[in-house]
Image 1 (cartoon, rainbow, N blue to C red):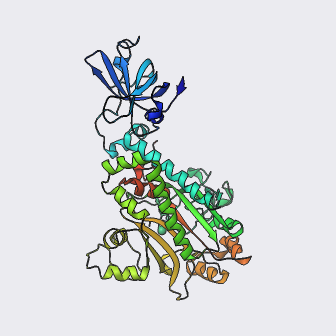
Image 2 (image 1 turned 120 degrees about the vertical axis):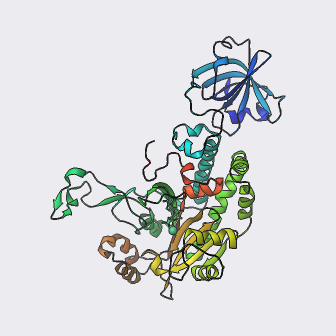
Image 3 (image 1 turned 90 degrees about the horizontal axis):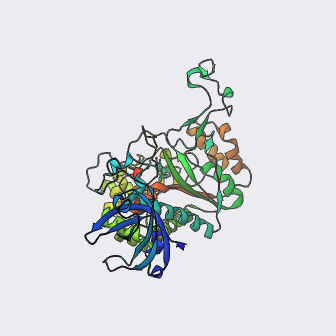
Length: 463
Ligand code: ATP
Ligand code: MN
């Protein structure tokens, strides 16, 4: 007897085969004729398979008729063509083994639709729902697609450290890493004596692997890092997590235009892979979450992204005749409302904004000849807003040092990073894509907490 997944057993090729299926009961329906239908799911696909359990099964009265949502079983039987509508196959059970019961009095996932807020309070059980199963498969597809995209193009996968001493870009507050006892921190004068700490210096959880991955780009050419990143920003939004995954490609000899081109091809590939490889899940999101989802994504794959300088975007916003909450002026940061107006209302497609004021961006972005702007780029998409942030890096040692001083950073702290410019410097570029923002965008899920297995946000780290 062969073990099949539900996904395999649902296909026409399975008809006539003697199989074993294992999973969790979604529903049981008893027929007047003295037999029952079970809907079985094992996570291999969105759909369930119907199990027909005859009254003649030895444990029919004692066990099968007590099965309820959440119970786990093994079913052995024959796959046959289903007379019912909406399903190709069903399984005629010859044996059903119950592994675990799920008391319907207490099992929280009964038939009715639960709110996503409620499901966050049972984050350990929500993978058993249709929506989280679908999110999980799409998230997996995006990760596979990320590796595939870069591997196909000859990029090397680099593992940058999680613990870091450089407080990178000032990209939001950082979590400290320490073995010091909080109640008895050693002091030297008024200051914490970090020489007594584990690493003998202040250390943090990384906000980005960029600085370290640059060392590999500036020797191996095309590289990417893909791992967890941490930001202690106290922003309770639908687009921010304290722990999220970021993929950061970094390429030697790439200028900003090459970087934009790569980012566009990359996003399109992730989308088209999900449309092709997770068609059932994507149809579910289109039906349940956002009825425009498939049309929007297909439109994005087949058209080109808009490219707009920050200066042009500011003009466009000023001429919009909209009443924004935050004022728009050259030199001010664009707020989410501005980004969304550009990508959702005005241009109605992904937009790459570039050449931002130098005062708004970190020290490592290349200064333009105008002296006022840097070679930054942000990719904005409808609903999510910023999904990618990147830049061409400053490869000139003197300009880099000047920028650090301007931002009150101590160049000595970045001696190793400066060495990459001191010895054999090259033009290079890279960007960061937030994995969860990408999954949010592709699934249409409104809240970023619902596209990561166990979300970390201010006040939430239970599971
Ligand atoms: P935002 O302005 O949206 O807070 P950012 O400009 O701080 O983002 P970057 O430092 O440019 O973000 O990080 C690169 C990418 O990482 C972003 O484009 C986004 O996709 C993702 N990202 C950044 N912060 C978070 C977060 N707190 N939670 C989830 N994803 C994030
Ligand atoms: Mn950014």
